[in-house]
Amino acid sequence: MLPGHFFVPCTLTLAIQSPEPHSAQPERGAACGSLRLKGRAAPGFAMRRHEPLPDASKCSGGKNRGMSAVKYDLTVIGSGPSGQRAAVAASKMKKRVAVVEARSVVGGVCINTGTIPSKTMREAVLHLSGYNYRSIYGMNYRVKEKITMGDLAFRVQAVIKTEVDVTEAQLSRNGIDVVHGIASFLDPNHIRVEGLSGDTTLESDRIIIAVGTRPASSPKVPINGRTIINSDQVLDLPTLPRSLIVVGGGVIGVEYACMFAILGVRVTIIEKRAKLLEFADQEIVEALSYHLRDSRVTLRLGEEVESVEELADGGVVANLESKKRVSGDALLYAVGRQGAIDDLNLAAAGIEADTRGRIPVDEHYRTTVEHIYAAGDVVGFPALASVSMEQGRIAAHRAFDDGEATSNPSFYPYGIYTIPEISFIGKTEEQLTDEDVPYEVGMAYYRETARGQIRGDTTGRLKLIFHRDTRKVLGVHIIGEGASELVHIGQAVMTLDSTVDYFVDTVFNYPTLAECYKVAAFNGLGRLHRYQAD
Ligand SMILES: Cc1cc2nc3c(=O)[nH]c(=O)nc-3n(C[C@H](O)[C@H](O)[C@H](O)COP(=O)(O)OP(=O)(O)OC[C@H]3O[C@@H](n4cnc5c(N)ncnc54)[C@H](O)[C@@H]3O)c2cc1C
Image (tube, rainbow, N blue to C red; front, side, top):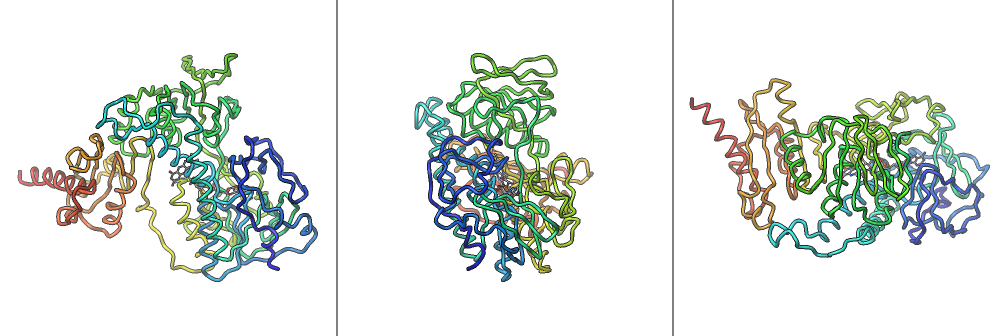
C-alpha cells in the first residue's frame, strides 16, 4: 500500500460549529472516526464552517507511529496555490510527491479564508445590492432589500466547497499523496507530520516550503473573533454591523471596506501612511478614493492606532495616537500578514526567517539550504495567489534541474478587487518620473465606449503609458468593471514587446470595454503628435 493511502482526505462535508481560531490544539492520537462537532484545526489554523474532516474509514489511527520514514522525491509543505502547483509540476516530471497540509482540507488561505471567500463575497455583495445597475435603475435599486451575513456566507461556502473538491481531484489525478497534519523539520531531509491520528515521518530528497501566511496581530488590538476580527474571520461576523472600523489601508482592508460600504455600512479606514495602496498609480488611487468617499467611507490617513477597546454595549473604539477616537460596531484589523513558520522548526533544517516570518530565497526560489526551496506568500512580496502558483511551478522545475520553466516578474499583473476594481501591469507614472523615462499617457473613459454606457459604468477609465520615443507600452492602469480581465490585453502586448500602434491597427469586438485600448492609444498618440509637430 502506498504510504499516502493512510491519509487520503475525504470530501464528506459536515456542518461544524464556529471555529476556535488560534486556541484549538489538534487532538493527538484521537481515535479515528471520532467526528468532532466543534471545528478544530491545528494551532493557528482557523477552520471554515464547512471544512470536511478526514475520512475516518481511510485514516490509519496510530498505526504509523514508530514506522520508518516514508520516502518521497519531493515533499511540499502547504497545499495553497504555490504548494499545489509545485506538487503537480513535480508529478508531471514523474516524481513521487507528498503534500503535507495542516488544515483538514486542501487549498490554503487562498481557497479557505482569503482570495476565494473575499472574491465570492464581493460578487454576492454586487449582485444582491444591485450596485452595478444603480446608475441605470436609480440609487434605490436592490435585488434584495435586507442583506444578511448569512446571504453572503451561503454563496461563499458553496464556492469554497467546489474549489476544495477541484483541488483534491487534481492532486489525486496526479498521484500526489496528501498527508494531513502539522509539518516540522527533524533535520534537512526529514519532516515529522503531527496528525490527528498519529505522527509520521517523511524522508525527502527535495522539499518545498509553501506554508503561506497568517494575519499579523498586535498587542494593541485584542482580536475576539466577534466584534474585533482579522481578515480570516470576516464571514464569522454574526450580523452585518451598522458601522465598521477598518485598520489598514492595504489591499485586503480596502477591498473589505468597499464591500461593507456598498452594503450601507458606515466604514472608517485608518491607515498610518499618507496614501492608500501606495504601490498603485496615484491617479487611479485618487479615483478610488473619490468612490470610497461617495460611498460614505471616512478616510483617516496618516493616523496610527494606539489602542482598541471593547465597550460595555458591545461596540468598539479605536484610540488614535492623534487622540482622536473612532467608534464602530465592529473592527477589522487588516495590517499585513506574517509568514506561517512557527511550527516548522526551521532551525533543524538550517534555515532562518526574517522578523516577519519570510524565508529568504534566490531567483530560483532556493533557500540557503541547497535542496530546500520556498515559494508563495512565505517568501514575501507580492503575496498574490496568481504569483504564488507561478513561484511553486518554477521552484519544482528548479528543484529537479529542469531549467525550462521561466517567468518574468515585470509582466505580472495586479488585481485589486475594490469596488470599482483596479488592475495594472508595468510601471506607474510615479516610477517613470523617478527613473527619468520619457513617456506619454493615453486615457480612455468607459463612458466613451458603447459598452460602458450599456453596462452603466460611466466612471471607469483605462490609462495607457508608453515610451515617447520607442512607443513601447510601459504600463496599463485600469479602474472600473472588468479591470482585472481587461488588463491581460495590455499584458500580452507588453510581453510581446509591442508598441501602442498595435491598438490603433487592431479591430476590437464592438461594443466592448476592450475598445478603451484603442481610444486610449488615439488619445496618447494625439498628444504626442501635437508637441512633435511643434
Ligand atoms: C483576504 C485575502 C484576499 C486575497 N485576495 C487575493 C486576490 O484577489 N488575488 C490574489 O492573487 N491573491 C489574493 N490573496 C492572496 C492569496 O490568498 C495568497 O497569495 C495565496 O493564498 C498564497 O498561497 P500560498 O501557496 O503561498 O499559501 P496559502 O494559500 O497561505 O497556503 C499555505 C498552506 O500551508 C499550510 N501550512 C502552514 N504551515 C504548515 C505546516 N507547518 N504544516 C503543514 N501545513 C502547513 C496552511 O494550512 C495553508 O493551507 C488574498 C489573501 C487574503 C488574505
